[in-house]
Amino acid sequence: MSQKKETLNVANIISPQRRITTGIILLALAAMIWLIFANGLDSQILTTFNMAPGGSEVVVNDWIFRTLPMLNIFAGLAALVGAYQLIRGFGGKTNMVIGLVAGMFIFAFLSWAAAGQSMNLAGLIKVSLLKSVPLTLGAIAGILCERVGIVNIAIEGIMLGAAFSATFVSSITNVWVGLFAAIITGALLSLVHAWLSIKYKIDQIISGTVINIFSLGITSFFSAKFLQKYQSLNNAGLFPTIKIPLLSKIPFIGPILFEHNLFVYIMFILIVVVTYVLFYTKSGLRMRACGEHPKAADTLGINVNKLRYIWTVIGGMVAGIAGAFFVLGSVGRFDENMTAGRGFIAMAAMIFGNWHPVGAFGAGLLFGFADSLAAKIAILGIPIPSEFLLMAPYVATMIVLGGIVGSSRPPAAEGTPYEKE
Image 1 (cartoon, rainbow, N blue to C red):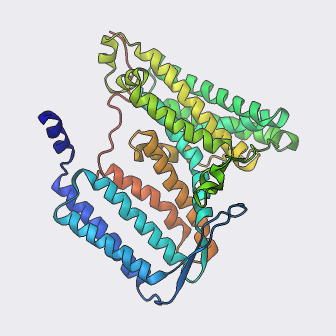
Image 2 (cartoon, rainbow, N blue to C red; image 1 turned 180 degrees about the horizontal axis):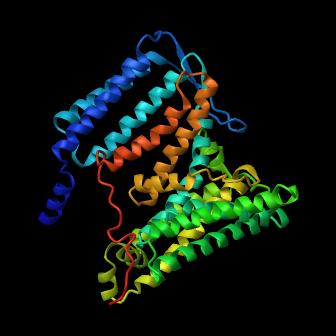
Image 3 (cartoon, helix red, strand yellow; image 1 turned 120 degrees about the vertical axis):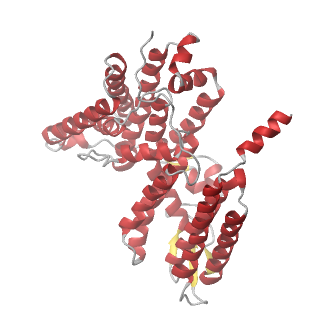
């Protein structure tokens, strides 16, 4: 009992430097709400949030409130939390408090941006969720590879190759066969990466880069040679929207979470399944052992390289699903380099989420939200360059990597080839 209590006390210890730095950041967010958002705002101006996405059959009343008092409340709460963090600290609850204040800051920004106008809040969240799908799936693919010790920066190339396969096969068959083709493409490209990394011990960054260059080149060539010339081969179609009975009728939440195409539900399922397998099964324990201490795993009779092959290929299959989303879950056709670096953003989401599926989803949602918000701000005519909004998730990632909101530690043996003695 005393040992358990001692463990909990150690977990709650936060370094003075991190406590002070975090407190200053929280106070800075409170000051920004006051000085940038609330300063000079008419006390009678109203903000209107639409609480049902466009096209939804669920009727929800708009949320209308006076902007200035709401901003003052958020600024005051953020200042109180920041002051307490600076003086005493929240211990083991620091990350939760940071998330809470960050959420208040984002809501304050949205309230200020929509002051005197209306913003479809439910639609913004729904689009953010949709945009997070390839990022979250790509991050999960990276987690499956890196937890077993293989660095896979080829996720970008795998997603692009899978998108092309999904387009070509779906155009001549149907979307289900196209999705299967994308998964097979992801598996094959990951198998090549695993083969080069494990058997020939090629630097895994170089191996992944080669696959990225290969995918970009070959998809661009075949797109120009066939898809642009024969438009019937670039007409993949889309998976239909699936409304979950009863759940989709829940006000506000229902249309956001339960009116989507297949890929959103696959993402939710994989988050739960991968989390359970990784942290609550014997297979997950063996997998993590290969990524943390392969020699110890080998001593216990675990075939390290075999598991690295298996989980790298499975990760590639998940990346293949992410690639299929760009076509079968979004636009229905293939364009050259249509992934546009999102495989690398998925890697950033993986790091931001501390190599955990739930954390990766949160990071993917943040990136998707910034992307959606940039377009929304342009419509509202807010004098903020969209590039600044797109920078926000990357700045947050650098803050995480800097250790301000906690440590972000990769598996100890990732990227290191293992040779049985």
